[in-house]
Structures are given as C-alpha cells and as structure tokens.
Length: 82
Image (cartoon, rainbow, N blue to C red; front, side, top):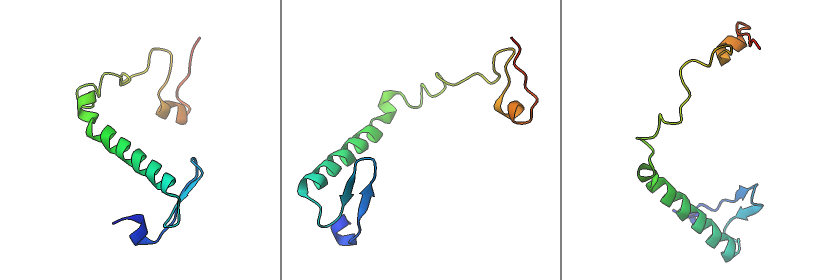
C-alpha cells in the first residue's frame, strides 16, 4: 500500500515537508531514500554489535559512593556529600 492509495497527507515537521499525492517527485524520492537507509540500519543492527555489546556501556547497579539513585532522590533519601 502506498501513500497515493491511502489519500493522506503526512507532515514531517522537522524537515518542513508534506507528503501527499500532489507532492513533488523530488520530495517523494528523498523520503524513499530515507526509508531505505533506515531499513538498512535496522537490518545491520545485529552485525554492528547489538546483542553482544548491550551490557558493555550499561551503568553499574549502584551509583558511586556519596551519590544516590533516582528513586532515592525522588523520595528525598539521597544526599550527596562533598
């Protein structure tokens, strides 16, 4: 199913583009390229190191000494000592 079949307008606010049946062919072409680039990125996620490096950049379970977690801060229990 394509945009032409749906008869809708899609507004891309950041790009300042409105895609519809009456859009210019260059706007439709650029949208198609962006869709293909996103699909390529998604298809290559496992080869980039999604699963094996997932925990590599994760924070430790407890914060360093003298600081508090977000839940402790929300309840007013955490104090940061200098």
